[in-house]
Length: 384
Image 1 (tube, rainbow, N blue to C red):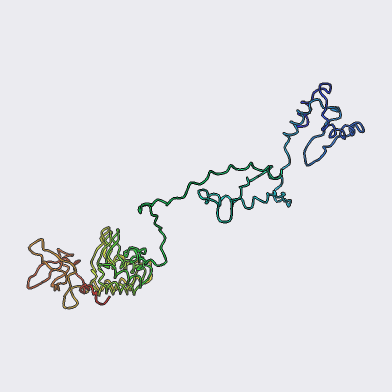
Image 2 (tube, rainbow, N blue to C red):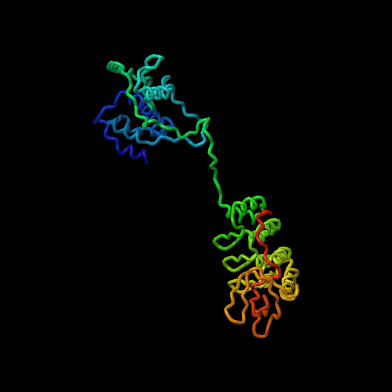
């Protein structure tokens, strides 16, 4: 297509004469056309992609137009991965010290020449075709600076302009400022992962080891779900509330029953867990949360059932109040946390959740879910 376009741009040979420089280039082509008119002419160089002139164009009328067309013909691009390396541009010797000269000029702009003598003149950086063309012409001499004024004593600067460094000096005292995490977050995570030392350190920094998060979950809940028995024992000894419910009403005993963990259920009951505590969503007790599809279901369910049946029968019918209660009717008893109440009759015909008991010589009804088989363990800070 470029060959036909070139033919359309040519004009009759009588209008202009060829320049001497291009005549030398076109002479081999014209001679080859006279020798063999029937042969197909080839370009002078296959890498330059320059089409040869046809035999009939023996004289070129407008060489400027031809030169413009040839200049617009694309040149072959270098393939990727070619082993040929492009020749490096030879930089003048002064280019290596150009950066040092610039820095020296910037830092000594306002002062006189240094002790090493006058500053060397900066040589402009030449790139591209200017670097290949050779060293540039010498720059005109710089005008001489005006004479310096007579030196006088420098004015005193105010103390407020003194700059202070933010870097610490070698002899300055260190300030013990370190990042400190929330002890509640550390306590909850360490109780779940089984890090006893972290739990002990976090409990020392907290006032209440039963402090819950926004969902009501305590460290004892997490330790039970992670089956971390040493942490469970430590938290109970530290005074953690074994009856602390979460936002859904799940106590630590519910969590242990859902895992069919008979060992933890035994420890919780012996430290004052409420065996009849119910959840908020479905009103289920701990025995109803045992998982029949997990290992240990029979042992855990049997133990919790025995505890329920023993309430009011063991220890001569004595049970221990786990919360305070104020009587709302005349046939009810009021009691406080830790009181030992003796059960006289349980599971009456009319009231299944209320037992008839006696306290301080008085008899009346008491709610069964307020009591445990053992009293609740109080915090023992001296042993932690």
